[in-house]
Structure formats: structure tokens, C-alpha cells
Length: 252
Image 1 (cartoon, rainbow, N blue to C red):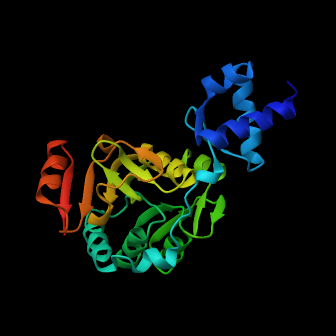
Image 2 (image 1 turned 60 degrees about the vertical axis):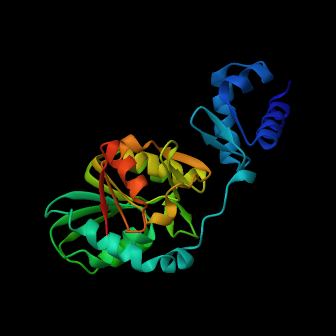
């Protein structure tokens, strides 16, 4: 099989199944797993698929993100309360991370002008913090995701590897007791997975509408979360189950 034929076969298989693992592609194409990994890297660069942990997913299955303008007004009052509660966890001179969620932007609005280092992949968050003289802002750079006004992709992911933060504040598309945190597409999931792994303490900001939801791509298991802040719409039973998992839960 010629290289071009193998590329076409890989794209076809990924398209048919939605996702497929490296080991299976290696067997079907009769080449080594290392060759498949190189193929996937080239096909991702060409925009024909997306690499995932241990395999690849079809770009056809990538669910579009909700535009920022829509997320900004959805459950706005709940998000503002969650953001105000989250800001109370911040201490002067800490290094923190804010993701590109609308709740993180509300945090940036509420945050006092105190000595802080804030790492973010959000254009909106960076602009909001620019007026606060004592807050040092570090932006990741990367591919601009227009709908979320966030930086994603390999450059954004690699830039996170250079840092370690005291606290990471992030949101997600879905929170599920068994399946953990999830996002609407692979690129957002990958960068948030990196964020979870680079903080001493991970704080999940999620209004109650997100619980029980499993979005397209897994981000992290719930045992990676140290503290959750949600609104008072969360059911007492679900709140009890989360606390049984030794997750600090605050409802506002």
C-alpha cells in the first residue's frame, strides 16, 4: 500500500467509525504503531482528522462550540454568583489559571487589583485584566477559536507545559458522575486536560444545568477536581453523591 493510499484508508476508517485507536489502525494497515502515529500527525496538520489520546477522531464529529455571545448570557446570574464565590479563593501573590469560559470572564471582572499572576488562553479574560495594574497576565497564544475567543491547539498546549499554578479555575460543557468532565470538541478538551494537570488545586465552575451531561470529548475524571462551585439548582441527592467522593462542593 502506497503512503497516499494508507492516508486515504486511515481517513476513511476514522470517518466511518468516528474514532479509532492506533493499535487497530496498525493491524488494519499492516504497519507499525509508530508509523501510524506519524501518519496521524501529518493528517492532523492537513486538517483531515484530529488526534486523540491513543488514536484519532473524525473532524466531522467535532461539535461546534456555542458562540461566546450566547454563553455570556446563558445562566448569567448563576455564573456571576459562582464567579464571585470563586474569587474569594484567590490569595495575593498566587499564580492562577483562568480558562476561556464565560464564568472565568466574570471572575476577571470581579477580581480585585491585587498582586497576582494569571495565565489564560482567553482573549476576553486577558483584556478584562489588562486594566488591573498589579495583575500580571500571561497569554498562551496558539490557534484562535473564533467562537470561544480562546487559544487552542499544539502551541497553546505546549505553552502550558512551561508553567505550574497554585489554582486552576475552569468550566466545561458537561459534568457526569461516572464519566467526569467533558467538552464539546477535541481541541478544547485537550487544552483543559493540560490545565487540570498543571495546578495544585483544580476548581470547577459549573452551573447546575451542566450536571448529568456528557459532551463529546472527555476532559478529566472527577477525582481530579478538588473543589466545585455551582448554583443552588443542584439536587440534594447529586450534591450528597459528590461530597461522598470527597469533593469540596459549594452551592451559591
